[in-house]
Length: 114
Length: 116
Image (cartoon, rainbow over all chains, first blue to last red; front, side, top):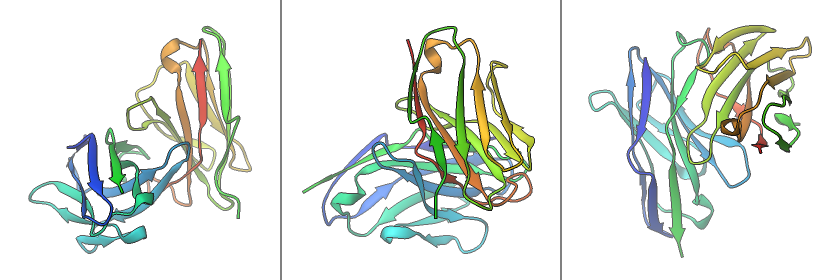
């Protein structure tokens, strides 16, 4: 079984300040973890993925995430928020024993204030 | 290069009707997955197809069915529509068989289905 919990449904930051979006996961196996972003009326875009290589993963647009097995966490961070980062963010867990099923969290809405 | 294309973009149906949603994957991608995203929630897995075979099915009733064609495009069919079927339906393609290895998806922009 696998599940994802995104700890904050809404996060608001000021432009230029750091971003932290929190994600905890549960998996019976060593998981693969992903972060996707969804802008209004757009499809989901992959930000980054962890697949059992380096625990600190760098993605697009300055985002990165750290896999912490002991804490079962995969938090998404960015040093300095930009207005264009305002969107919905989804943490996703998957494993190749699950026949293609990826489990999404409920999402975190990021608001960036000028 | 064309991304994942879905049609139609919006659709309004009446309860009890059926609907067919279509998806064309990125050229060269053999795996197609379908997800349902209800407003305010994360996408929920419906089906995955690879090389025209069903490789995974989520917790959805038998009213939901899908198929993949020789050109790797796919259709999602929903019969006897309920109000609760109103959602954004997302199609995603991948170059790998998700059951054989974990890759990542490229998503289409979705079909917004409204059931009235």
